[in-house]
Length: 518
Image (cartoon, rainbow, N blue to C red; front, side):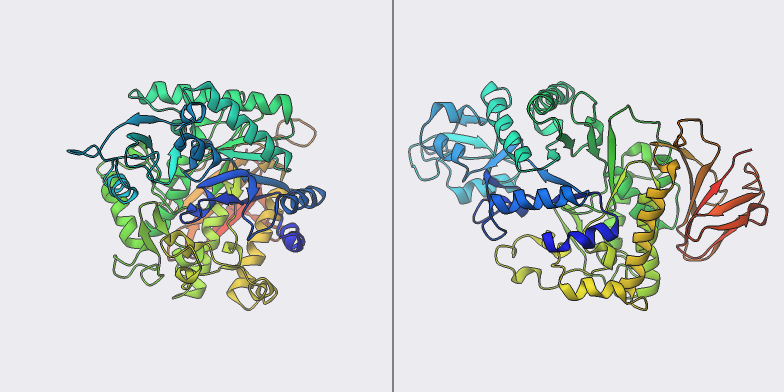
């Protein structure tokens, strides 16, 4: 990883997020999220000192390290869990435990029975499956081998705060934690969420006191608070980008464009996809009247997994799992069947993510148009987890392909790198406020980035971002652009254009133009 830091710098990366590199459940690690110890690393990746040296090297290169700290649960292999199973009252109080038996028998559930019940929606597993006479059950919402912590116990705050500070001490400057909704259980969802936010506030206060150079990131953008987790990951707009690509319509996506300026010291991440899977996280408010949200989700499932004849992703090899649709951005975009058009769709998705409010999240391999890993099942420990389909190894040969400007990988890499450069150089992107722009075209998304000038004065210019989701070239007329002065500057090549002549966007094309409002 240290050897690839120059590659990250060339790409314009400012933060590097690693999936949990810690010791996890030996049989079902869940991509590292079934954490058995935040104090030990997965020995296949290296030791804790290696991780600390990586953090130091990244910091010297101007890149911050982001690490997940799982705060809602632990692996059943964790020292706390083992102590609870062995009868420690202190550690038992860390988990959500109740007494229960198999129906019609005094024998506790076996692990296989518990897994079957979890699959059926019964989220309790035996606390001590090795004992025939131990009636204790532990709540296991995610999986039978991942036990839910009980945040009603103050002991949990003490123990988790220690883990959080340890990971911060390894050099992580952003600590990604579970959303508030997973930190408190109860019948009243609103009250549980409120109490979960209090947990985030308490953890944030611990960091302010003992590790002030580190901040929390929550997995839910609705949890973002300056006094709690100041950074959040919003997946709703991500799903809307892929919906627009499938429907060739921006009707749903444009509803998510207006974003008021966030409070000072807070922000959002905007991923193009997600490490688990692509889930359709939009709500009824995002769907036009007359369209059933669930029916639209089912359509998108079929579209991206081969169930919709003629779809550009029909032969991509993407699969549907309980987490959502698994696939790299290149495969979801149809690069394998249509390299040119697929690459254009992939770049359009990234151009929109880079233009909207929040910090764009780029997943390893997407910048090189890497396709799904067809051999994912051959990797030891991955056979039962299809999410490894879109977590391919990035070999040295793939990295070298970025220098081939005639190859899809080189073209995609060059454009995404240019997107990062443009965004970093344009002061309009420094702010978080985004204003919508009516292109008068159902296939073309328009938005305006507004930011303070470097001298702190009000802006005289805005960056107009246009994105064409149609399979055909589209035209934004000069009349539509008449709210700006006639001359604008296209950021991609720093060329001045006459807005009175309109702007032509190629199929799946995009353009960022610095303009002056009248």
